[in-house]
Length: 345
Ligand code: SF4
Image (cartoon, rainbow, N blue to C red; front, side):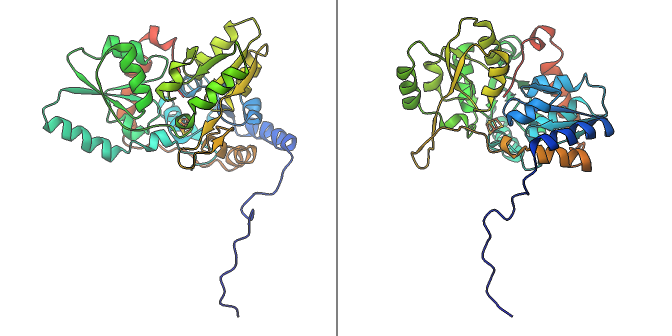
């Protein structure tokens, strides 16, 4: 018997190829059989967006989920989004096609570290409220006073966070800096960032602008400040979609957010030409033209089919979901004016 370890076989873990059209037929059949509906984020593969019953940003999808009649929701997105859908819909079964679909931004703020930092600030006698971007785990949401999206953050901070309180903003430092600028409030910023938006390169964006005279630049507020400063429009995914729809005259639009978003933009506003803004890998200095979120990319048609068929992986109710639900509802559902202007990642 050989004592040599077997060499790893490249591609051995890849699932066998299955025809996407067959998979879509199977998914349609399983949806009826299992009384299920599919929600897909703008950043997942276009073919999953095409078979979904609802598409949108994280918060729009969580709100859509409160309106669906089916007993099961398949959330093609990442973990914190499926958690929010479950929190808003405790009686429904919420499935996430791949439990490993996380989020670098949410993971940059673990609940134990946030709790320890809040305690430190309290011991120093600081009087503050914690405002969290929706891209956080439910455990973190349960430690916060307010949850905001990129669409309602400014209003919520201006109108609902008392002026005599300091603000601890978590987890996205770029969004926090942008909000400090537009609200004029000082904030203690958590040093988190999204791995996708962090890599956008100003140099590549300026080159793309030069090569496309008259092009508009749309960017997500999770991008670094130097990208926002040269953008024609800054907003969450749903707001970017509306901005493109409102411009009737055909334009070249440079898109500084996850590149799969272009699928939704082409469907909603096909009159424009969309060009993804290339990014730069901070560790190697190489440019990268894809800007795909590796977590979103974990969602595949096969995994959507498998989770429908098997009824798992499922997001199960956790004890801290009750507190997170209070904070989410207070922040995002109770103010009708804000609820018409919401969007997240
Ligand atoms: S694009 Fe960034 S913020 Fe959005 S899910 Fe991926 S890692 Fe998280």
